[in-house]
Length: 272
Ligand code: WAQ
Ligand code: MG
Image 1 (cartoon, rainbow, N blue to C red):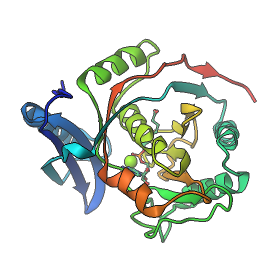
Image 2: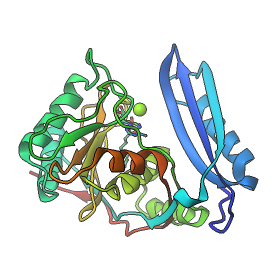
Image 3: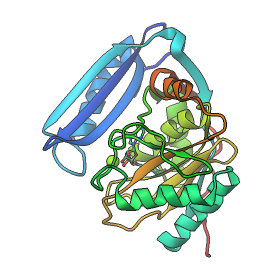
Image 4: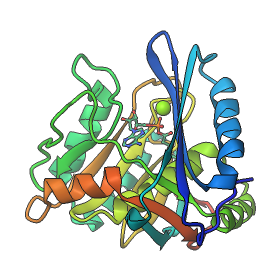
């Protein structure tokens, strides 16, 4: 699979962006040593060509050498999975978890209302995340269509293999989970971020999550109804402490490689 040796001084970012009718279809990134670039590029192209929501019309690949001073290693959060009886119960569970992470009920409701309405101007999906004030629920991201995008994160070869093995014991896994988990790991390490809420804009993917440093990565199914093509991401920021430049530098420019996994808990079914 991926070739990545932490001692390799030459780390490359290999990024793929696929579009259809000038719309974003799929995007992903791998961080690999020089000898892994070719395979990473091939696997990303394969992924773009096999996307469930249509055949890519245009696929762009970029390969960039990463500044070694920007590379940080860290562990993945614990993974919990909650199966809710319905969307309402799932969202209530998400609210309860976010309250534990010091996010106000107003801020949670604000984020969810934006997801439901379509958080981009005109009611579409955003390309990145909203930045939501933890008390006021106010939006701080400068561009409401683009949002804030986190990038430059991946698993080491061993962490990826360990994760896949641990997840498969409970019959879970896949690209989506892997991508969301590594993104959440980077976001929860960001200075000024208290928690994250996400559900996909893919109409067939109804599982979402709440992530926070003290709570880990909490998958909740369902957070939306099947067939609903709206989704989003909110990074809840501590309005008393966050510093825009520091946060954006972390999310955009620092390079995060997970070289160890957390605990994977068995899926838990709950009733209201
Ligand atoms: N940085 C910030 N926000 C992003 C990024 C990014 N790199 N990529 C996507 N987003 C935002 C954007 O607003 C999308 O509309 C929204 O997130 C949802 O993106 O089983 O698949 O890629 O544990 O559709 C979560 C559960 C799956 C996974 C989430 O999100 C699991 C998912 P999607
Ligand atoms: Mg999507």
